Image (cartoon, rainbow, N blue to C red; front, side, top):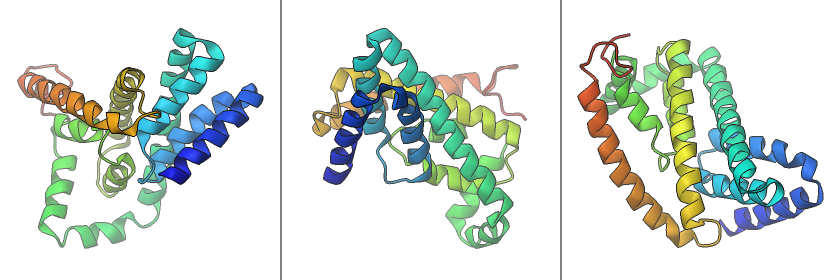
Length: 209
């Protein structure tokens, strides 16, 4: 983590000296997080928010952070999803289905209910890249994948921007504890809402394809 923070600080200086690369950095960092599960999305969003806020002002910086982070994260996830599905997905599906929990996960994702998958994908404290690898092994349709991924990326990044600006994670990593507490309170309320909507006709969360 120390190396990562040092790297971000060097990147911050580079962006300040070459402001034209700021949008590229804003896209690249969430893109990399979608590929490598060890990169902390909360720190990346906080970094983007800080850099864009300093360069373009609070309002414009926040808007740019949200838009570029969503695009970068989605493109990274979709690229990996397609590559896995077109290459060795069938091989790993056979391996995963040998285990009880693997089969349970695949069946849940491929089922008719969207809310369960969306709840998993919208958790900012679960490595999105690992979930994405798992989704690539399922038979979920491209349309459903794009919809779920786009919505979940929007939820996570809006959440990160809001709480990241409050708790200032990049300067004090211990604030992630308070951020997690706030997240799980909101998540509990949100999941209860999803469950109440799942049986209503025409709802996005209705149990049908």
